[in-house]
Image (cartoon, rainbow, N blue to C red; front, side, top):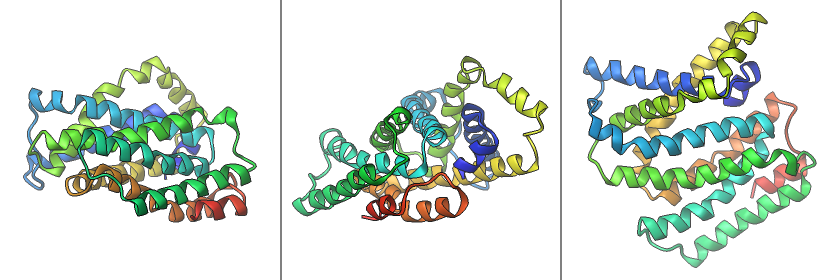
Length: 261
């Protein structure tokens, strides 16, 4: 969905601000009306979620830039490889149980599929892998940072989602002017590219983003950071199928077979 939004609105910073800002606003309203149990705003909680917001901001922005500069399969590869880094951080920082021999073997098998993809994919170019590599690093770090934040408070999942998106919006807002995307948005509007289709896709991505954010916190309350990362990668087959149906910017059949490992 983000790939489609960025195709129509190639301003990743503005798109991400809309996504996290709308999520925070929706949850604030639902909390005020008593529809959901959303923890009220306090400075102490805001400070607690500052670093988590930084990690979330980097995850979202590097994902948007990676999708903008490379095909979806390349992004999936680096996301898969990030599991190893998360597993190490899980063991060292969160004192999780060390991976068993069978688990390590399974992850190595996944890695072999990623290597096979690199060898098979004609669209894999080193020149456009910078943002993809950055996304892989951010994807590895985010569940570790979030798990540390979760363990330090007793908030509800809706409350954590609200704080995470609100703080991400505040932290990310200066980027709108630093990257001069407000000027780019004005140009897109003048060219007629801000139309019904682009707005509809943006709205859908905002709703979907709120759901993903909430479910992410809900999962991390009950599982390890490594398991969370593995679950995030488990949907790669559906992602690849949808990508193959919608876009012409995708990998070869041989490369996709490697990613199926």
